[in-house]
Image (cartoon, rainbow, N blue to C red; front, side):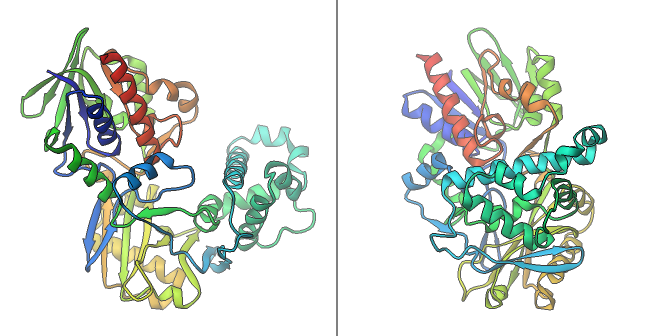
Length: 450
């Protein structure tokens, strides 16, 4: 009998396994796929390695950076030098990019301030759109000067400066006396300011040289034979003194404890004996996975750089509304990454891959011009079509679900524990959240095993 059986060899499962093995526990990791990594995966196209899953490491992601450094992997900064393109109501605008000077860099406190202010603005815009009674009851407050709201809700000068730069590029200069109400109407009708600021605001996101999959593979290599691929768990039987995992081929694996790293909907879809509490199944049903197709266009060169552009773009329409430059250098191929999301992803998933390539190419042409019309290659990953993933990037908590059930989703059921990006109290939905959640759960299991 194992001390702990772990379902899933993504970042959470591998992190938990390494922690428990270091504590001297006997562990097995069961991965349904023929590879490790979960929602982290590399692809090869036209001689280029691209990341089909999670890739960005942001400010404060210290746990995952510690792992990267532990395995001797290198990080590379976003090559986003140049202006950001914004396409709004059929017209293209350029947002000046962060220059890299000290004056343009945001401190961690300014990053936090900026993020909180944007979250408040987005929530207000959403409430204005959906709650007419609220907007009528607060019409005097909504009539306040927009600049006053910005200075009140974004307290640092750096965050205020970056916000006004991108707002001006997206919607034009704030006119004298422009009200918060008018600003919220702009937010509801235009591109996603959060995406624009995150990609072009001097936030210093990095990625792993060779892809985040290199980290997952290094972790798995260190664990050796305890990681079993092609082991599809169909059911979980948990009693007072141990649990049994029932594999799809009929094999049964006994362990004192089980850590499931599956997203909530996939986790509760397994056969559980005894059955899980009704509230957990109901909550998981409301925690829908994101619907995203991550795609790349490969060009003979990163042509946008010669034009003073970063390759990053944001649009208010079209099947691909954001793009990022992930090219290795100026002299190699141009690698333009984008996303089909939501309804566009659901609709295009039913069509051919050639049609999706054309849709991405058309979006790139609308943004960058005819020079983008002839990519050399195309590659994509439709995460909603992945049986053992069910969607990406992370789960979307329906209104009220996170505040009412989010914190308890991570609570264990007897000998069954939960870990992963969706169960983390910090950086929920991010790779960092997956690692932190796994570390916390491994500590709990180790304490119970003592």
